[in-house]
Amino acid sequence: MSSNAIGGRTRIVIASDPLAVRQALCALFDRLMAGRMAEDARDTAQIVLAEALNNIVEHAYAQTPGEIEVTVDVSPGGLTCWIMDAGLPLPDSALQDTLLVQPQPGDDLPEGGFGWHLIRTLSDDLDYRREGGRNFLTFRISAQQYSN
Image (cartoon, rainbow, N blue to C red):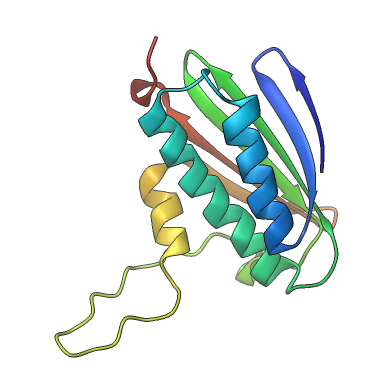
């Protein structure tokens, strides 16, 4: 993992594997973002970023080698995150409207399918585009979750 920070903006580049994602999240939120965010906002941002990065590892790179570039900017308006990877595109190269399936009594809970629901629910201004063989995902966590 490589990183640099300028003002409120931090950029990291990580390998597309689960251990690298876990280590990057720890580094980002325990060291680089420490004291810059209220605890509840930090937890929300970490959940959203973890879901997005794990989706990239599991689906975009399908467990093949690659790099993920993450840039976060903490400002009075909130936290904005930009993620770029060169993995496979989302189906139809667009964010899908995913409905959370409500299990019926006696049903087993599904293994997956909660990630995009969490990302959509916890973030604002979620945007995805495919350009030049790369995926670009952006989202924002609102300022009202931050302390002064």
